[in-house]
Image 1 (cartoon, rainbow, N blue to C red):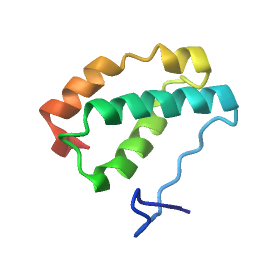
Image 2: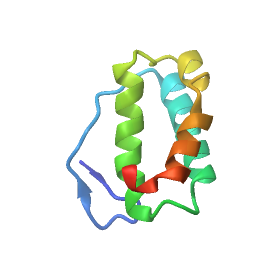
Image 3: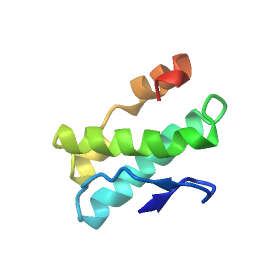
Image 4: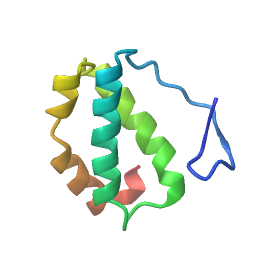
Length: 88
């Protein structure tokens, strides 16, 4: 079981993601870019649900290789989060 970013609360949701290390690194890189661009509109407690939703979307759409993850269009996602952060 994971914890929130500040380590105070457990996250009960888990996502079955690939065991491929380059793909995991690519997903972490993309998520970091999303979080960096959205840092002014997101709260700390928004990070775990966004992480789960992002990984779930990558899994659901079959984007589980390094190349498909790195070419995932994150700019529209960043704009959507900035426009409606409450949707996270």
